[in-house]
Image (cartoon, rainbow, N blue to C red):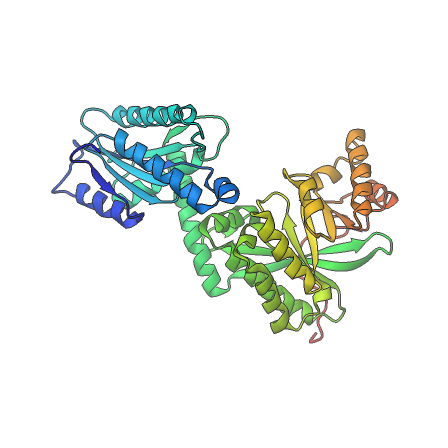
Length: 422
């Protein structure tokens, strides 16, 4: 290690903010002596953990940290923030371009490491950065903007590996930070609502199930698009709390319906790894008194399910309660066939992107016919999303699709089935 280099290996963001606070103060620094904050993310930690286990990934992270320590000049401050995440503070001596040059040289050094050792260096490093005082006026904003610049490019398979914060990124990130804070408050205030989307049985043309859809009106912003705030909740670690609220609320409401119709609830697969999904579902059923046979849980194919062994065990626990399992958004993800064969789903929901092309694209119709045949051969039922025309309904009914939902039979609405207290 180079003499005089300031290094912290505590894995705490507090070390970074304390250091920045000493540098970004009237007594220590002025606009004529700027500094840059580089946020480096190694990426690909989860696949390495799944494949080789935590000890292997920890050893690789330590190797990366040693490489950074050796490469970064003595005047810089470097801290390991945990996992594959690092921060580097660079005092600017002449020009802001020094920061990007150093970032570029560091990534090049890491890329050289990929082919040097026998076992490779299996990370995909990215750097996002921001500069004080040109991009941000204080420590909090500087850290936030560097994180935003990193988030913009992290995990991309093409494009830049280094990214300085831009005004539009900064504004978007500031809005996301505000949204996260508002979501936390919404959980405290029970400020979410449920909309209900009917599911029709094609054979009888009767509504057999209602799908619960969470909605949120953000203070001073109005209704927020569900994918937007749910994505924010995923990133902020709030999705488990929101899904739990939906489960408990929907089960309690469904228990009071006059007719024992089915209830469908979406749960993010991202927290299957916690092994708390089955317990949460069990709690919602117990406190509401809802018959488990009326409940079905939807997991989107678009999301990462995590470790197959954990997923299989968790889904088996859910199914063991008598609850049905549905693979949602079928045809839009990357592991559809693998999930159909490895996990005990009872139903598959065809994504609306296929259904809307019925009557327009013969190739899509062929794919749908084959898909329906495969689903039935696996002893599963099928529901089609986004049905809007009689032609689409006729095609699906003719080829054995048991259920449909979409604007042809009803839009999501606050109104739910009549309750016993009406």
